[in-house]
Amino acid sequence: FKHLLAVAALMAAATPVAFADKKSEAYVETKANEVLQVLNDKTMTDEARAAKFEVYMNQFAHMPSIARRVLGAQGRGLSEADFNRYYKIFETYAMEVYEVHLDQFRGEAIKVVGSKDTDARRSTIESLIKSSQTGKDTKVYWDVLMSQDGKSYRVRDVGLDLGGSVLWLAQEQQAQFES
Image (spheres, rainbow, N blue to C red):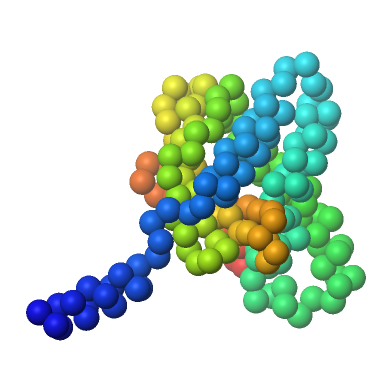
């Protein structure tokens, strides 16, 4: 019995917390829906929509971190000047990729359905988006990091559930860049 209790205590200590704080969930739901509103705005030209989408994405996601993450080990040796040149090109590329992926959900709201803490500052938020094209729900996962001062959040990656397999956009870009 003592051994069973010890194993149970060890497993409980090793298991991550089941639910992230409500603030990170609210952050994702609010900001993701704001981005979708931009994509849904039929009064905007494509150029104006793309510009506003870029503004929101730079507030919602930490694009320099995503850019470095995509480079993987190759990015560690870049000078600041080389990174800045790469970043300008990457940002344009990433905005177009994210806009295309999110565009398939145009017309629908994002609803947070759960979350899990990865560590004290990082959470994975699970949401559902109903595609206006197919009418089906798609699970979307958000890798969210709280700032060190605990006052703000940033998205590190977005994962789309494609029939049971999750495609993490930043991880996919890293694999493409490395190849």
